[in-house]
Amino acid sequence: MKKVGLKLLLVTFLIFSIANLSAKNIIDIYMDGGPVMHIITGLLVIVIILGIIKYWQLAIKEKIDAQRFYLKLKGYIRNHQTEEASRICSQFKKTTLGFIFWSGFLGYNDALKSGKKGQELQRVLQNSFDEAGLQSIPKVEGGIFWFEIIAQVATLLGLLGTIFGLIGAFDALANAPEADKSRLLTQGISQAMGTTAYGLIVAIPTMFLKGALQARADKIINDIDEFSVKVINQINYSMKE
Image (cartoon, rainbow, N blue to C red; front, side, top):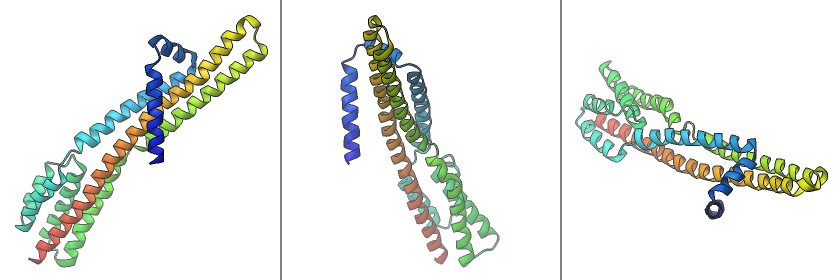
């Protein structure tokens, strides 16, 4: 809670600060920041691209009502219509949940046709679900860790720009001609403060984006775990009937 509160405070401060800057001032700060600003902007572009890709994967491609999907399959399982259940799952193979269910039913139906029964059939069923899960679940969270890395790098680059700016400011005080001292000192301080602010402007929203995507990925994985167990149990119950 303390970390969330601190992030919200920083976001509020940055938004307030940006709102009080004119477009000219923002451009001047950016240009005074030097090469570090361009590198941080490159990271921002990468975040936007990765964010669009992961949002499409988690919110659009993986969009499926797990509860309704399970209840629909449950009726077919009770009636021993696992072939029909497999056919329905094949229509949702592009989702992780649908692929795991389809693979599980496929393995179960093949084992059933080959004459396997009892514990051997249950073992094949469990292995089919486990194998499909190991193959597809890592892809759900894949790439999310990059958002945290980029946020940390953006912050560190901002601090690096701050160091360069302070070095330039101190160098101006020590060595620059009197006529140029004021200008170079101002430029150095502007670089120092501007790069830090810009690094945080990129890093903080990136961390919030990472948190939102991780929460969505966790929900998908939790649904897979929950309803995979329910489907396996339902099939095992139907064997005994």
